[in-house]
Image (cartoon, rainbow, N blue to C red; front, side):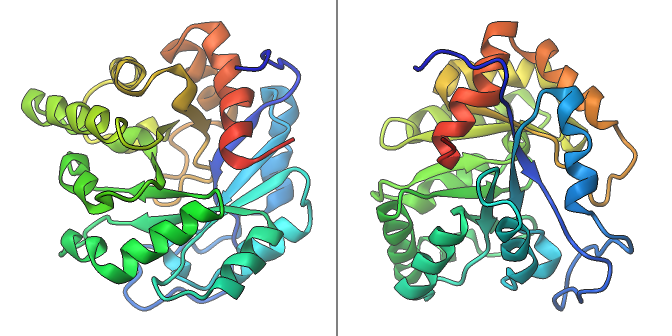
Length: 269
């Protein structure tokens, strides 16, 4: 691992969107306000953040235009996570890579058929994503990680779980979650975003951070604010969320999480 750089840090999970673009049909929630990139950046200096990752919000589906426009406004300090259909062509992947996209997101909240994501079109996309050096980011329901892990089969694509992977609330489910994460990590890079503790269905963020550290190691953890916390607005202030990381892990590891790990995952220089 390269030396920790205390002067730089990455917020690896935030959403940027206008108030006017329409939501896709069936969206669970569409905020009635704008989440402005400059407002997000205004919190960075005090928190020691210098770079950010813009994650495509679920309510825009595969319409990535606003995310790509945001990246274009600050290509050195921003990266993106896109939502793509499995038949996305190579020209699209190349264009998105040039724009700063480094991952695709699978939003499996409420998914009725997780097994469908193991089918040939998706497996092909995972392989092509891996070839570009990207990863797959997964947003899952409580305690569903163990059911999702087999989706990736023998592909080598790296996988990152949002929001602590929401391990669940019962001991048996939580143990199964981390056992599955450890098994998956034997065949590929597995990452976890220590983000949005207010979205956890049960358990404690300190406990879960320790379990992730044990399951996948210190080099595979990143931090994100989840700003603006769509659907959970007002739960925490930005600075509180940043300072919470220092309670979840040791200070030296927190500094590595904020820069070294995230810079490696999202290709920041």
